[in-house]
Image (cartoon, rainbow, N blue to C red):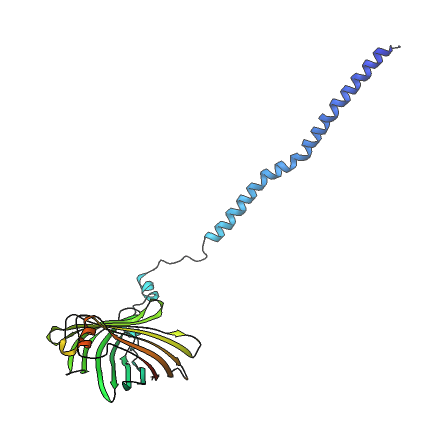
Length: 299
């Protein structure tokens, strides 16, 4: 049987259409068939992991031997009572003697000498202090005093001191009660401030500050300022109330050893306020500047 050309064309298009739709369907079915086993495997794996995890955690959380409860005897053995007093060592007693200034000068008014020193004996927190300073001019003692003080450390840098002071010169000897502080101020200023109560209710004070400026390991420059005050007039000793005097100094020393250092310097003393007026009325100098040389030693 013969078919016409249009009929054959329609038949060819139908065959091609059937072939095009069947190939993707087959490919899709084949693709799903290949991926099906991993889906089943993945469904099995979580169960395997769960069983494995249960086995491991059970083995880790269950101790091989049961731990007994902690008893009072165990705590006493682990944390015994400590006798703190038995552990403390006896405080070490030390001492030091320092002559900060042993100096002399030669001026128009004559030769002179001066000293300023201190000594202590005790522990790091409690000490017995001795402090003394004085001055001689032309072979005569112009001033001299000695302080005996008990010092107690109130901080790593400061001590509170209290005791007595004995003035030997000028005039008759006098005794004072003393209380004050001494130590290291910020920026490494060495400071001493002491108040005195004397016979007859006289009240005075002394403030001293010095600074150590290390130029080299052995060359040291040391400025100093010292101020005296009085609460009321003491005409017998030529002192008026208020600021009575000020002393400034600048000394350059060379440490031959840490314990021995010669120095040279300049010192200026000046009477202040009404005390200066009392000195003028007595025809006494109110100020003095001198070049000094001396040594600083400690042992």
